[in-house]
Length: 229
Image (cartoon, rainbow, N blue to C red):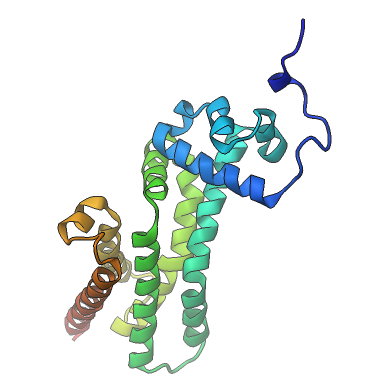
């Protein structure tokens, strides 16, 4: 039986291990998985969309599952790149015994600003991929959720614990942190963006949202401190 060109075993050297090709395949796969879901995005469609032959998926990623995992890793790296500098500053300051409240609050605002920028600047493909992953491929969400906890939630919990004089492991501390982060996440959806006129003056809108997030966060922290008295 003759073997078609597309199904022949890949010979060494057939594809150069170029980062550009690998990156293009990942970015294309992200959009395809977002649009069609894991099952709906066939390996043939993934290869054609990236402009490569079918065996390239196996060559670079081992399988479609490997390509999907590479997309997840790509998103995790993006989360880390956007939030790591602020998280590092938080860790450095919290290692000290006596940090002024104003410094803690400024660090919290920096974390929220970094998270807001990550949320609102995500492409539609990123957001749709995450929504689909949560429903169709839930195991993929575990490393993504771990990345958000590590890079965003835990630094914010640690700061808020200091700011409201409660233990970081306290349920109320964690709940208040999630509420504060939730107001940021709301603006990652198209509906709220449309409602506030997003699209015409994005930077201006982003500044307004940033100021409101700071204002509401300060109000939550004041209420929490009053409740401790």
